[in-house]
Structure formats: C-alpha cells, structure tokens
Length: 145
Image (cartoon, rainbow, N blue to C red; front, side):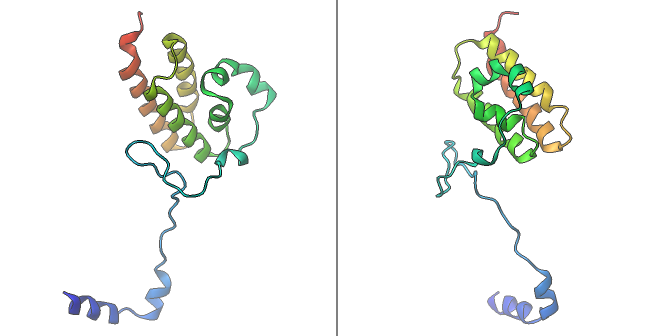
C-alpha cells in the first residue's frame, strides 16, 4: 500500500498541487460532549458584537432579563454566525433548565424562534426548528394549557 501511495504522489504535477488548498476550519467554538469549550484562547467573541439599538432594547427587556444581554445581542446581530451562537446558547439554557418560570421561558423563546424562522440563512432557520423541537420536548409537559 505504501508503494501505491508513493506512486500516486509522484504522479501529481506541480500545477495540481497549487490548486489543492487545505480547508480553513474554525475551531473557536468546538465543544466536547459535556459542552465544555476546548479552545485555548480565553477571549470572548462577544466584544465584536455591536450593542443593541434602543428600539430593539425596548422590545426585548424581558428577553434580556431571562437570557442575558450578550445572548440577545447575538440573536439580533446582523452577522449570521452571531445569531447561530446565540441560538446555541439558548439551546444550552433550555437544556440546563435554568429558569423557574416555565410559561415565561416558553413565551420568550417562542418569540425568538418566530423571529429567526424568518431569517434568510438556512442554517439559522434549521437551528430555529431544532430549538423549537427542544423547547417542546423539554417543557410542553410542564405547561398547563
């Protein structure tokens, strides 16, 4: 097998080698199975997120109280990577069952999901649907409708 690989490597011309580029991978938010962040640099990426506009802040006061301003800034960011991080943070928040008022949690999370289901990026829409599934599976049995 080694001889075959060496033979194949010798047949690659220099023009072909220039066309092959390693794929850039972003490992900034790689987490293990327990949800621990495995990157070595400790800088939070929220520093490059613009603050909420006053008009948005006025309508999201309860969401800020529940999820924190950093997560809401991510959700309302114009950058889809930020919105993705925000939704993943909300999913973690839901799975940790960090808030005692389940009705309010359900209501505020649905508002965020409704907003992000209208996004133009397919990944955000799919993650919104996943968030809705998680919300329903974890909390619907706890709500008296």
